[in-house]
Image (tube, rainbow, N blue to C red):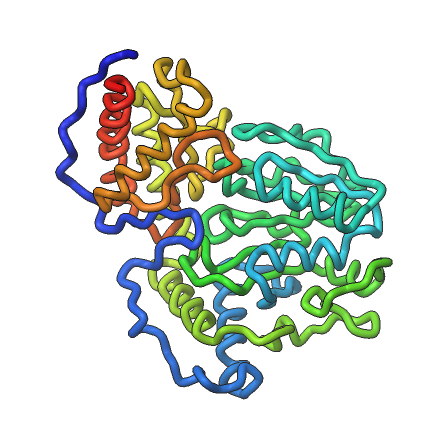
Length: 393
């Protein structure tokens, strides 16, 4: 095997080794002591409990610059629950185009075809690193897609591909995009996310955002299948609007709610949405500069315009590595991530289990861009160490 020189170990370390793509790093300076606890042990339906839930809704709407006639509500089961709520409640009224280019998008395809068993489904798929042909999407139909492929590091570049005069609904899983990428609200009818991504919040609860067109669908269409309680957004043909005023479908964790309020306050302090975008774009810029000079790593996204600035995925392109067996290629990033974990430099950066072998580094707003910059020489060092170990074996 090829020989390689081991680089000197870098001397500058990230201030935090937390680069997990979910749950993600807490905001800078976070402490449990910052959380208000007077609601703990009380009902979420109490006046105070409802006020705290409404505060999450109001602060989220303000930061996101949500249109006045769009609704935002807290729902069960994280982003997954919010997506499933939309699929089960709204699909079936017309044909649907399902877009998938990574693991979570593929999961929604499976649910629609195998669980809902819809007849009129078109699946537009692409391999990891690519987008489907967006020009072939039919907006006379409903369209379901992820804005950012969390496991592939590939995002739609903008909303220009979405037809202005669409007839169907656009249902967007935006969990690793929202608060880090600009979303064109006029092009989106349903948007879902969880606090545990860009805000660094805790899991268990999701957010669903509805346009007036989505509300009209809910009030004019009744699916043919039984609807679990946690998916129900209507009663007697009318929207249960309390969901969007803090009256949750099931019991939320008020400690998680307090943590979300803390994250939203931090976002406001750093300049709201623009402040959040600035931080994650800076992290992406550091990665791009490093990739431009790397002789062993490249972005998994083939088109630079589609590269994620949150779940940044790296593939190994060193000809030596590409000459290894498939099992050895899969072992390389695993060993790199293990080595960096042992050094307490980077935790949880091995690629997603279903994705091609590689590394996945979270660059959301709670991560200091300077920590991304400090991490990059460590990637070079770890790769050189692991390559030398392979060469010696």
